[in-house]
Image (tube, rainbow, N blue to C red; front, side):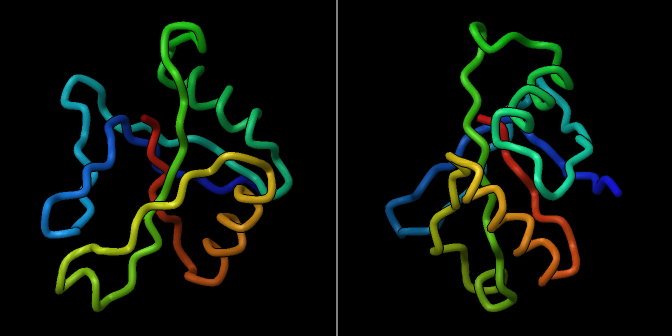
Length: 109
């Protein structure tokens, strides 16, 4: 069964205080993309590009997520985001989603 994953355009910025922030690209709205355990990173990248109706040559794709914990939400995000670079990293992301019981945002940069 497919799960839905929120995908946003933007980029991660680390401030001088060491806190990470995702800066959303203001010209593109977020999208929901169907994902399933066992899909490859290339498949996910293709789905994201198709959902945003852009080609790989026009835009580079860098998928990432931030695994929050409740303390960091109150004190500031100092844990760096995780970049999904291969199938193993994507598999870990899906495992993390199941343990947390909810979908984290995957960010398209």
